[in-house]
Length: 362
Image (cartoon, rainbow, N blue to C red):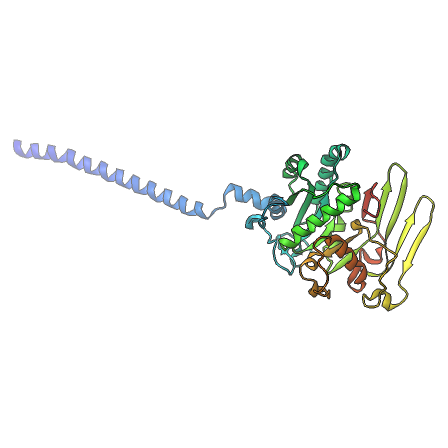
């Protein structure tokens, strides 16, 4: 009797321990299952950062604009990094699909905006505000856009700091001339040639335009020139602040066809015009060797592939070496090959570019 009671008393605590152990295992299994299920579904949920990016408009364009490349004119230049969102090589024109909701279908062509700078103490003081103003304009332009800025090497560090904060994709060329320039026009001419040599070397294929840092642009202008297949031109208003003078010059157009050139001085009301009377006048083969008109560099844009693939645009490859004066070569091609020259906008009836105090010959 005593022995049986003792056995029962010993067995009761053992069963109680087993029940408590079973409850612990059940609780652990339940917790594990809940954590597994929550982790499984959390893995499919978007993170907070990606949700923020998706909710931010034009994020793809911002990523493109944030990519920058600084280069030295003497160095072996490398192409832009692949994470820039756009390739900058090839001869067929660079395009990018930014994934926005624009009505325009298809990818857009690369815009190459070249800006030269002037040396001198007064010019250095104006350089920062002028570059910032142009940068603000370029930030409003739909990507892809690459800004090529050329300046004297001695001024490069200060300008590099400005460019890094613009939010525009850029290439910074520190220019070291082989000669001392006697005029601002000669310096700008040499800098443009340096920029074209960089574009040609790295096959930056797109629509190229020379934008003066002191220029003012209608933002719709850049959408217009992006449609250029070969060459394009438009009216430019030049304002000389000191002389209080306004001159508008550019093409005479019938729709988008260039039929002549004009220059109008709004101070005295005089207008000079040159028109093409025959088809031969608009045909390079029938054009005379002399030209009465020179084109303002602020008033035209062109497909950059003409620099390394002239045959594609009907130019002979047997031409003399133009690498030392590419800008002169391009200006001649634009004026001679009028069959491929497009007037912008239609009828050339709207001024979309203004420049200050820069003579048309520059």
